[in-house]
Length: 173
Image (cartoon, rainbow, N blue to C red):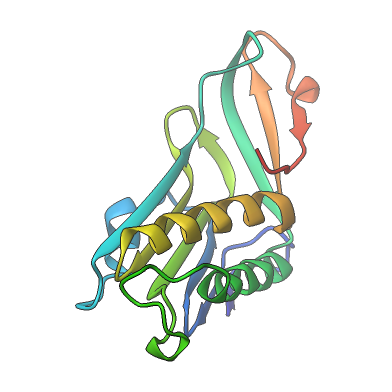
């Protein structure tokens, strides 16, 4: 794991056999993240890109700010990726448990700091021999990260003071 500061909300990454977890203040490179899960045995790659939208309940959103307890958050995300490798039913193509994990590799990259409208705040890429497992694992990872990762979001609105920005709870949708 690497970190770049003594603050708790810092760049961090963790590489595990099943994939990669990254928290970064840098813009997310979607194509690089997709390439990181590539494998010759892959028949499907599922990608989720969560972006900052421009409105919430009738208010114009100007940006989101993310903070994290990075050291713990990357470990939590790594645990979620590990569970994704074992949590999903196998397709009809590979029903036997002896054929290995139905998921090849996962990558979860989450942005920290300010994320302007239209920019990705999270990218999840999952590769698998078959689409069903890739879709299931990608959705599982997204919902678990939203529910369990130690990452917090603050939403800023047009025409409101900075101190009126709202902290949003991480809940599964």
